[in-house]
Amino acid sequence: MGNEAIAMGAIASGVNLVAGYPGTPSTEVLETVAKRAPKNVHVEWSINEKAAMEVAAGAAYSGARVLVTMKQVGLNVASDPLMSLSYIGVKGGMVVLVADDPGPISSQTEQDTRTFAMYSKLPVFDPSSVKEAYDMIGEAFKFSEKYQTPVIFRPTTRIDHGYETIDIKEEFEWEKHEIEGFLKDSSRWVIFPKLSFINHAKIEKRNSELTKVLSEYNGNFIEKATAKYENSKVGIITHGISYAYLKESFGEEHPKILKVSTPFPFPEELALKFADGLDKILAIEELDPVLERAMLMTAGRRGLNIKICGKLTGEIAPSGENTVASVNFAARKFLGEQTEERAALPDIKLPIRPPVLCAGCPHRASFYAVKVAMKGEKTLYAGDIGCYTLGNAMPLDMCDTCLCMGAGVTIAQGVWRAEKDRKCFAFIGDSTFFASGITGVINAYYNGADITVVILDNSTTAMTGHQPHPGTGKTARGDVAAKVSIESVLKGIGLKTVETVNPLDFNKSVETVRKVAAEDGVKAIIFKSPCVAIHKSKEKSKVNPEKCIACKKCIRELGCPALIMRDGKAYIEESLCVGCALCEQICPAGAISGGRTNEA
Image (tube, rainbow, N blue to C red; front, side):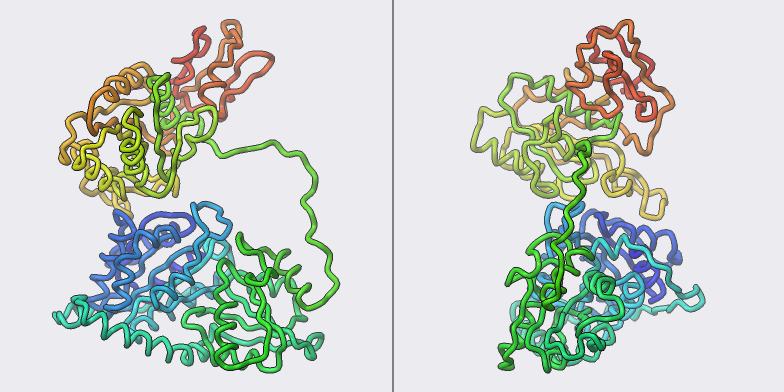
């Protein structure tokens, strides 16, 4: 797997420290390091991406080789220290892996980290295959040390989660990187304005020189046109997985190609060689027109009479991920070849399958308890990033807003400021609370807001694959660690009312919500019940068809995928049911039984 290859490449390069925050499609990189690296390599799931970046920076100041992992939206959290690190620099090799998600497949945004690299003035490496990612990560560490700068490593989902059979180094071949240690020098490590001014000029000079250096980098190369296209005046510039798609589309016969692995600083000298003799160039890329703009600037600066096309001119779609079919269509059309319109999807009427909470998920019970308790009230249900975002789906309809991690707590404050008569609830998961929710709660308490913070504690980071967090008492490597109490944190902030309840105890949950929501100020409810994916029960709920009155309340109000109608009666699919017994507690006819007994 691509992420495993990247991890093994980092281990083989003698990485000393790996820190990150889980986020699809990046998560397996750190998980693989945790499983496969020697014990003297420090591996941690940090509290969030900013913390990971700063921990890694400190180690890099001491000469350690460090890897930081995150997805593209995580870079937003880490951007503050990274922007300053661009100016300060590092001593040990520092690679910042940011996994982009064209589509997006599992993200809020379609950010292109190549654009962030230009903005932050940091070199960026962009692999096009699993094998190249394995080799390139080691080259990135060496590049970082040589130029004493962090470098960004930007795989995309199709590289991260793609598979390839590759040879990797045996353990005896792994590098052993010795850490020199931190050398005190405030003129280097303390970011005063004067130092930033001086270093900014150095960075601009360095990046200008790197356009020549990277023209010689073996990841950037020109593929000459084959016989069929040797007289063509058209070339294609591409990168990443789009390069693989292009090669698959054309096979042995292809036009002139420039494959770019370091989009910033752009390998301008190599691009000039590529452009020689061409009249038109098509840039095929995901997501922003980074290569297209770079070629336009190169052509303009050098006075080349050449047409540059791509996203800016409409030949390539402005958003979404590329595919073999879309690349083939765009490239052949640009070359003037006869090409059929993209084949339409077969007209098959498939059932609509929206994403839903798992059968028995405690979040469903939490949302339903709040919904029942607040029926008839003017409310706001501010959501957050995690499994519980799926609370927006009908019939729950309990997620009115969702912006970014931790924002639910502060969005609720803003809405309450504008509408004091609205009962504002902020739903946030246990992992997200530690990552970015605490700040919002402090802000609410300090500024005298009147909101109810609802923490959905399922004892894991469920959405990204059940990674541990400070509340679980385990580290990235499964070792026992200090366990942070959410209740103690909230009370330490100053909250007087913090109630913990099992959401699967429906009546008690409803009673707790009504009581807490009626109080003034900032108060909190912790709905605590483990994720069904890590805590399964053998008990199964069953419907007695003789008692069922076919009112459909269980189906209409809960939306549990295990509940269906069969032969005019409610029916529970045994393979899906985990015996949470929520449906048993709301059935007006007492027709459902057999689930597990819920303990507070």
